[in-house]
Length: 236
Image 1 (cartoon, rainbow, N blue to C red):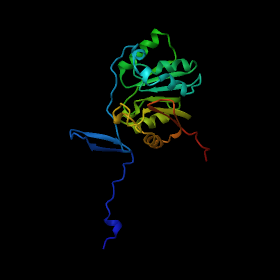
Image 2 (cartoon, rainbow, N blue to C red; image 1 turned 90 degrees about the vertical axis):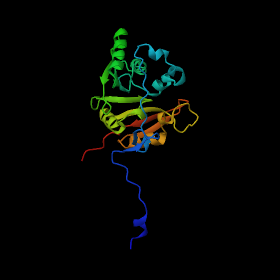
Image 3 (cartoon, one colour; image 1 turned 45 degrees about the horizontal axis):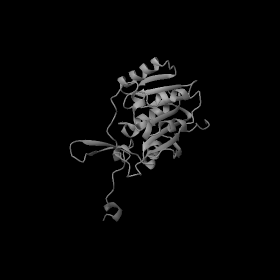
Image 4 (cartoon, rainbow, N blue to C red; image 1 turned 60 degrees about the vertical axis):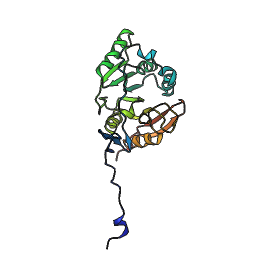
């Protein structure tokens, strides 16, 4: 006779890589889920003009200067702007690291071409572009002090692989800063798939070995979450 425990239904264990798939609400396709979170579709701007950042209403609604100030950058830091687009944050970061570098990472060549054009026109020498892929930012190992990801992590099609490569690129003690709309606030005029809760972000960053350090309450609608790559312990 089987015991009660054997008769109870069991939920399927979560795959070790965190990914599952489920049918979309309209039954037309499968959607990809990572650690319980449905990955959002990409909603990228196609405006590659070098002045787009200055005209963008984000400067009023999302307080990018507060974001840059809160990074507490040192003049010699190497900062990776992940999902750089046409340089919205890249060119705000550049003056903050005059003896360092900003690595503008994107998967769209036209975006990076716009960054390169503006850097050349303005004689900005500490900006470097890197053409990444959907699962690899192609950053040099152990080279980055801060990786900034603003409003795009939730759209990564391969979040675990991307974050594993980013962690490899960080120096010991290096930081990942995620800026995402707050899923905890149902009043935001943002589709739910394009928001993240702090608890979910902390869970996903922990899965790749990052340690949550703080969440700064500096933005009215977004989380500013800081994670750190721990220094290696003694060998032996």
